[in-house]
Length: 286
View (cartoon, rainbow, N blue to C red):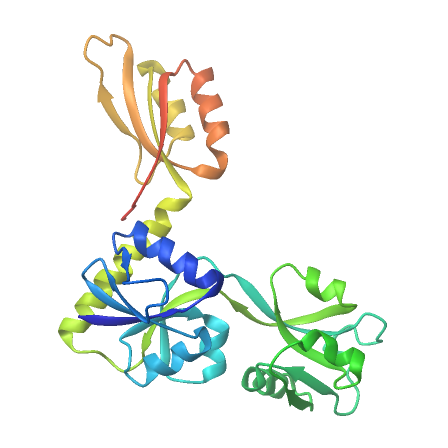
């Protein structure tokens, strides 16, 4: 049974649980504080700190793990991203005080100090940028560093940038785009383990692919099929089914983007569509 390392707390923990449950891998633990759990009877979960997951996977203590890509990149371990899970999106950015003259990397003078909880990524980024900096590793409260004189710049995570603004900081540039990823060690697993990992990736990917899609069914005039195909292109075209005693009407089934579903329904109605039904999709495999 393969072992999957999952974040033990926080928002990532809950979103991991939701995704796994939707994929049919229900998290079954003896209690809320349990360090291990069954994932639908197919895998074993171990709950550890998100920042420790890259090490667990790289060292073979876990066959796979789910954590932020920023933590994977900071670890500098030989790991592969097998699937972008689409949640936990954020950016690692360079920021300076709002009242600073620094508005881009070109404005940096001398060897400024940079406070961060990501020293490896910070050193690598500025080295590639050709800028000399002094990295000041901190364990938290990075935003306060420039105001206390600890550093002139910070490198920290942000989702919307609002926290930076509240703390009187201005974003200068982006170091890294991050999101939750399913990761494995770069060295090839044995055939049996690789097959199980591939099945896990496919199961999770099918849930993610379905989340922003809807299944649309409607009876439409046969004479309007060309127009309907433009409204409902589907994955490889809509499915057309004759309706018993339908006369000039046929049934159309197709997958459509959830974000524009209201426009799709309006367009179908204008073409004479009837009995329109929209349902959620649990899984979608191409």
